[in-house]
Amino acid sequence: MLTTGTKDVLLVGLGAVGTIYAYILQRSKLARVTAVARSNYDVVNAKGIHIRSKKYGIHESWKPYRLVSSVAEAADRPYSYVVLTTKAIPEVIKTSRILEPLLSSPYSEKHPQPTYVLLQNGLGVERDLYHSVKALDQGEPKIISSVLWITTNLVEKNVVDHDNFDRITIGVYRHGDHLTTTNSPEEAAILTDLGTMLETGGSEVTIATEIQRKKFHKTFWNVAFSSFSTLTGSSPTAMFRPPPKEGQSYSPYVAPQTAPDIIPVLRAIVQEMLTLGDFELCDLSACLTFFLGRALGYPDNEDGLPSSLVDTTVLRTAELHKDPAHTTLPSMLLDAQNGLPIEVEVILGEVVRMAKETGVDVPRIETLYALLAIIQNQTLGGFRQPKL
Image 1: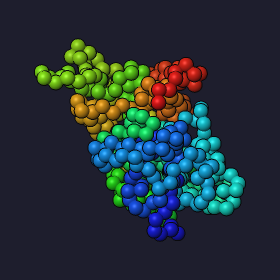
Image 2: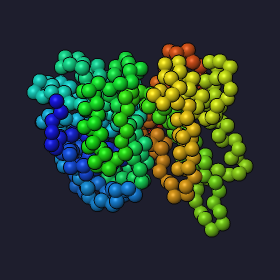
Image 3: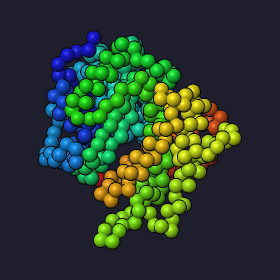
Image 4: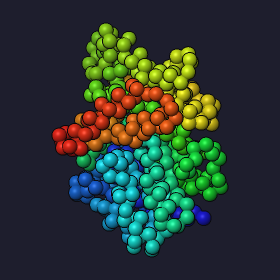
């Protein structure tokens, strides 16, 4: 049975997303948030975090209920939830290594395992943690995965900019099963409990009966838009925003000479999925989501991966990035600019591996994967230095 009252929640990773969701959880008054700030602990401990949010307002020197510098330091009490907001970069460090103090003695012998909540981009990000918790022989691991839509950037080590929205979809991770579409009573109770916290804190929450198809759809946004942004060094505004009118001044924007050429290239990346058969061309990431999604067993309906998801994603992206006031960058581009590792394996690498397993040819995505892997290799080799 779930505990009642205020719950202890551990949040690991006090970057942009971590800060906003630590603030949301604490704002709900349903959670005592212990936050692990790793690389920015000293400045946050001394000065707090400056949150500049169009939705939640300006908050100078904000701090969570408790701030610690490591997971080991936080491993002094049981938690109802452990929320992981670090980037999933398994070639640098695996989730089980980050959370090792919670997955080993004495913590694992003194306290029950919490429900783990992964606020991470990419596919397959849950597997490593699942196997590590399973090895403790304390029953089936409780892992909630998510799809997060948010525009927020860490502009300094203790300064976070946030736009006017944050939407999160949460669902239970079922290892080896992405076709069950009904939550058990226990699953529903945990999801409702967490969802109530987040919703009370101000976030827009959707509870999914099967989360992997939602993550699958979000990943293809990243394949198309995050990859192009990172490789070109330009935000999606360079793909959609019209030139400034008289009296306006902003950049980047789409020059009239090149505007007709950009979206067809993005379409071509996706339309390679047509090699599965002679199908009519479809819009932007529709083909990618549709055909590989069908190969994975996702139906073309509201319970699976409806083709309409693609149109709404493209339209929302275009509308958002046509706005001259919009300045938020995709996190992959921002990481690359700052000389930090990028989420290339869990986004593009995982898609390429899934395609090979299902017999789908994705040469254009393989090319994007290879190009981004070069950026990653340069970063890991120490040739691209962090700015923050």
